[in-house]
Length: 520
Image (cartoon, rainbow, N blue to C red; front, side, top):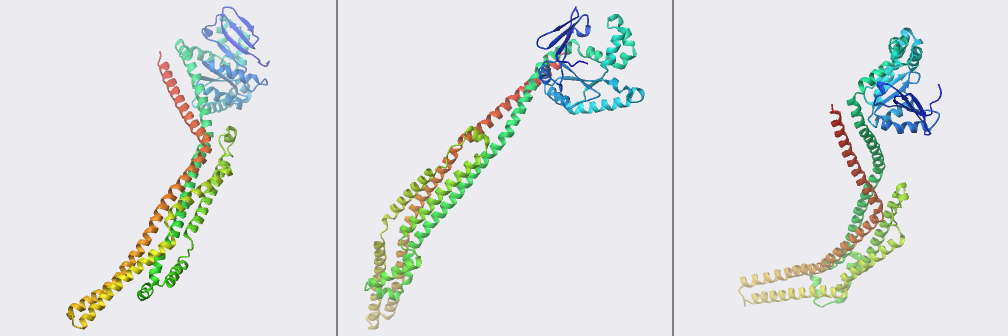
């Protein structure tokens, strides 16, 4: 047969005509056909043809159809093009009847006109149709060749209808099953329902396509969402690491202060009771200064201010270096995302000048705080205060000893009762020793309290300055990629909103469909 290159339209009319239009549509008008009353048959070019526009034209016509007779053949049942076409039709929720043509070519394939081979083909088509359509489809097997031969032999008028219906060739064609199906199925009620359901089917198809697009975009966005979550987790981990480094820095500063704080204790412990009297009573500065200098070798400290500033320099350098490395890592990671690069969704957070300024500014601010806190520290004055306190302790202890010795002498000369004098002498001797122990502890405590106060002020200042700087760097890096995170979050919200709207439309369409199906 000739290759069909046009769309044929067949309907009822009083006069049999055939009209061809410039847009490749051929209109056939067949008079006095009850079957075609309020019914138009459209024969499309189909798919998998030589002309590429056939598939496009067919797909454009399908959404407007109320009932689809899907024609395949026994020689090529359900090729790939038919499968794809059925799947696309199914999206529009159309009523589909599968017509299997060319059954006559199997007549010679075996006994009883190839009945066994015909059943195999029909079972194959039924199984594939169920897989594609999700339900058992209506399948009609026909032979258009036998039907046409019967019409040509016996004529096509109404008076010849009885002869046609009784002919073996017409019966073998099974073409009457299609006419019967159309007559019984396409009642007035079903026609009205089909017309009402048709736009809903188109709506469902469009919504199905929308869902596919939304799912595809959601799958693409999943990588970006995971990237944003990973970025936030990485930044939180970095911040925790930096907090740990800051804690270590504060501990280093405390160690420096603790060493200086212990100098007085080392000094007191290095001077025995007898030596205290011999050195402090005569105020032997040479020995005292020597012992004070000896504490430096014990605490391994020469200039606490200088050592703290060295720790400050190391810490600020570590903070700036880590910040720059983290910013660079973030940019390099996001730079691998084509959507990010294409949309220019990330800024520059790794400029060297920015982190050099961070290093410089933070060092200057912390150094200023250290200098202010240690401004009250005068090494010579504090040393003299310690010496003065220890000397006063010895003076008090010596005075008690003098009184004790005098009381003992009076007791020996029997100026005082021996019992009373003995008790007083013993008490004063014990008191002189106790005064040294007690006053020395107070001297050490006063010295340590001064350093503890300095440590408290310095610790609070370091905690505030360093934590704020880390927080500022954390925010700067996140601000640099905020266009990307904002894009991801906005896209996620839009997809969720559109999915919700599509679900609402699908629900409304299903509700309206149920109401139409209840119409009788």
